[in-house]
Image (cartoon, rainbow, N blue to C red):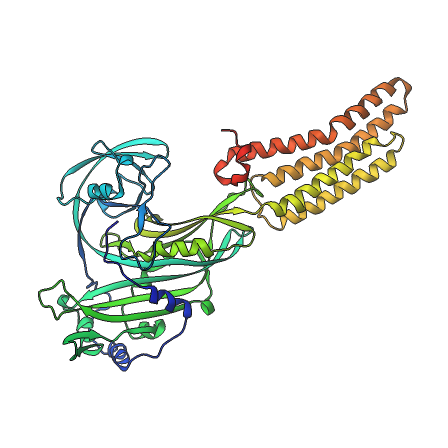
Amino acid sequence: MRYLKFTFILSMFVLLFSNQSNSMDNRCYEFIDGLKNLDYDKTTKNVETSIFTDLGFEFLYDSTPDASFLDTNFNAKIRRNENNYPIIGILTFTEVLDKLKNNDVLISINDIDLSKLKDEEIEDLIYPSDPGNNYDLVLVREGQKVKTQIQSYEYTKEYRLFEFALNSINEINLKNSTVKFSGFLSSEREYSEYLKWPITKHARNTITYFDEEDGENKSTNCSSIPYDYAKENRLPISGETFAFKDLISEDSDKVYEDVTVNTYLDESTDAKEDVLLSITYNAEGEWEIKNKFNLVSFPFDKQKIIISMVDLDDFESTVLGAFDTNYLLLNHTKENLEIPGWNVTDIKFNTGNNFDLNGLVFSEASIIVDIERQSFYYIFKIILPIVLILIICWSSVWLNPREVESKLTITIVCLLSLIAYNFVIDNELPKLEYLTIMDWIILASYLFAAAPNILAIISFQLSEKIKYKKLSQKVDFFSKRFGITSYIFLILIIIIINVSSVPGNTINALSWAMMR
């Protein structure tokens, strides 16, 4: 991770949640309104750039549990697999796109075993001081070991800072494969005065003022500028290049957007009085996205909700970098996120790349929520009642074979009850091309509900003939002894086979049933 001076934006976090517009200073109005007549090209990218020397990628990171907003040090740790090897995240340089992939597990660099190194030692390897050196990498990709060679590259790009956090999951619709969530998004861009872009000079003449008491230039903090007002007056807004992947709808009544503008001294230039213009886009609201669900293990399944944000800005000129607060807020979300009917087991924040848009490469950030279904509802309200219905159905075999009408009445009523339960399940799930655990249970229940009906007729016919009387007694004996027990045994077999086929999609409570 590229270490940044910690940016404390807790106040921004509070501001986004409050959704209240503050009245702006007159200097802010003067700055925004003056853009109408300012002669400048809004599309020109006069942004601050940085020189990078690295191996063309960054790792995935996880937040440390005890991280605090008051901590001034970077608080995340490199994500590692079960064998303690680091996992590659976002690719930052074009030359590595055909050599590395997101989520590759990095085993070694120049024969140095990375599982034995601390985070700081690994970062020293991927952020060398000298460009142009060759590095031999050993990776694991989809279970296969891959060897490749890359260089240490030196390149110049904008380091695009952003913040992306989840507030709540409001609705999970399995039938439509959609998720409604609320969250907030923030993106900051800086423009230096030495680049001679007119908008920066305009900001210096309006929102920057000289504080005689301190003897230095200071900035009027122009926060909560309405997005439409800023856009109407041609303010360049970095958030315009962000888009949610698989977005279905955006509730305009529940989405609040604003812009924050300020300046501060640019200490990187020789002219100490130069300023940096900072423009930050903020958005909070509710969105609906498509999400893939694997329901083979339903109702004992666990799922991943993946909320991805794509930066449609040019990959060749921009490196997407996350604020430290992205990881800090994960701890808050883990503690407070509640989804009715589901248990939240983990939340991760990923940076990576999107290769799906017509062959172009874009940077991407994702929040991944791991959830497990609370299965007790289905066990006690559906599965156990179905088992009870089957027990009642098979109790008919204890009646006298001559009571065939009573037997048929019991079995047919049980069959109709099962059909009613099938409608309950159909209302929750889409029409799938595969059968879930619940589908197999219901299908097996249909067969076992129909079996006593058929056996009742056979037993009655055999009992009417003296020469088949012993055969009739054997049918009754085996029906009484193995009928319902074979049904329960079959249900266990169904569960074991299904959860073993998709162990990663099954709740941990059924780990005993996985044949590994």
